[in-house]
Image (cartoon, rainbow, N blue to C red; front, side, top):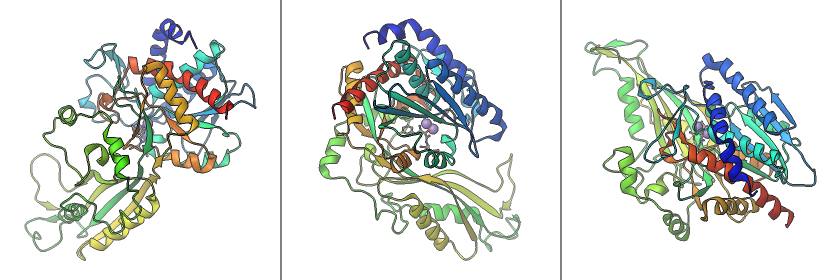
Length: 464
Ligand code: BES
Ligand code: MN
Ligand code: MN
């Protein structure tokens, strides 16, 4: 592994250019207008895996977007690493808030990224991080440094709930057999504070519709005498939190895993500056569940958030109207032991129950998934830890993330293996937001660190 740094030095321009080419394709899975682009991205990923040294790469059709499967098996007796990532991206809107077009990548220097950072939708989530694995594989195969077998499974529907991946995994257990699953689709604490993500939150995503009168009404003629669905919806939503910002849905917290004081004290050791946190978001104060710190609120505690709300007149000027309908999209982030389907049901029952007789309520579940925690004494975790020590000169900090990759718990259930989340993104990378970016330094550091994971994992596994 001695020449990984010189290999990166020699090829970094090409590594960056290749990623930029991938970022130019608008693979927005949520918007069917981009269907051909998503399919073209799948082809591009396939080609890149073949070039990097995979012997066999297939485009596996699903009812939705295809899953790219590739492998390089050097010896069946050796351990196998399964890499997962996604080639689809979030919609880039609102477009006017981007400083440069989301699918015309540019590299710019910032205070945090004096080496430059690539601005584009998907730069960090997840094309950039996924492509680190492709380039790490290229290095290992080109230099005879691949110590074990590797399989790649790159999907195109992560940002819309991975509806078809579960079926694919269940139907291909044999093909996907592995000793560890490796994912780079999370972040780390800071460039000089490496961390390994040990937990992800689950998710239940629902849409609600409140219907009042059968048509939009004159707000003078009818105002005060009939239920206004927007007034009612906002009141119902407001009642979902109490004055301590606890969620009021009966049974919501029943299965929430409570961390011991020791575990919470351990968590509190991770470097964190509340001042910087507030400054980065331009807020004067944080806000959340009573009795928990900011880091606890966004990782080990469940949440309920309105993601979008609409109804009535929002055009220019004023229109005096009581709308017939009001809508909201609501996400609940869940923590280990909460079951997303059960929580969805609890929400539905409660929301229907609190609706006044004057309106009708419809709750439509969208998608969801279970949370995940991984132990830090596994071989996979130790191998990752050693890899970071090698390339950062520091032991990484285990950290639970607030985000969700719902498929991870399913991997454990279907494939019986642990997932190691080696994320190289930063909170400031603005994933899902305008001006998403991924530092060139982070990208190259990922490519440098991943081969060490393979080496240590193979050594530790063989010594088992
Ligand atoms: N890569 C993210 C999840 C993530 C980011 C986890 C940073 C931890 C740290 C992933 O692409 C994502 O956005 N997931 C969605 C859920 C999905 C079902 C749409 C999310 O967390 O909102
Ligand atoms: Mn992602
Ligand atoms: Mn995402």
